[in-house]
Image (cartoon, rainbow, N blue to C red):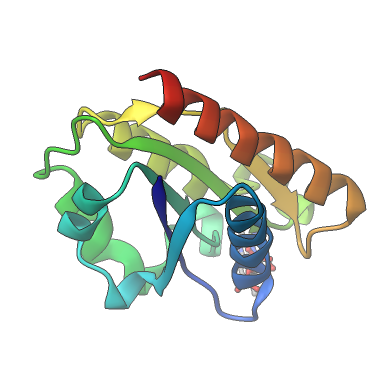
Length: 149
Ligand SMILES: Cc1cc2nc3c(=O)[nH]c(=O)nc-3n(C[C@H](O)[C@H](O)[C@H](O)COP(=O)(O)O)c2cc1C
């Protein structure tokens, strides 16, 4: 089984989330590729069983600027058969706008015919011990879905 984890970050928190996810995938013997969102073509996700997007959220719940092309391209790409999950770090200080990029990516991925493999995970700032447990469960769910699809 193989996976691709695509992240966007300014200050490193979302890369840390991505790395926790990657470690959990690798521990389960899933061959995993990691790329930064502006360096990634949506089409690449068609080469894997599991695709994970890890975006940060900015001004008033905005998507990462450097991820807008990727976001828009999702709408025109068929990812049938690919299992996806979304996790991201934001800041609960922003209350109603907390991690809004996460549901935005989920809605966009739902348009690709890809299969939702796990409920999304929102992280406040850097992942703590509890977050690591949640992310490991998230990865287990993704693998389970990919095994039974
Ligand atoms: C100017 C600014 C605006 C932000 N707006 C939001 C927001 O609307 N929602 C949110 O959840 N977090 C917001 N954040 C917090 C970041 O998403 C949070 O710090 C995140 O962990 C950054 O991820 P990164 O370290 O991967 O860049 C904002 C941060 C800054 C500096």
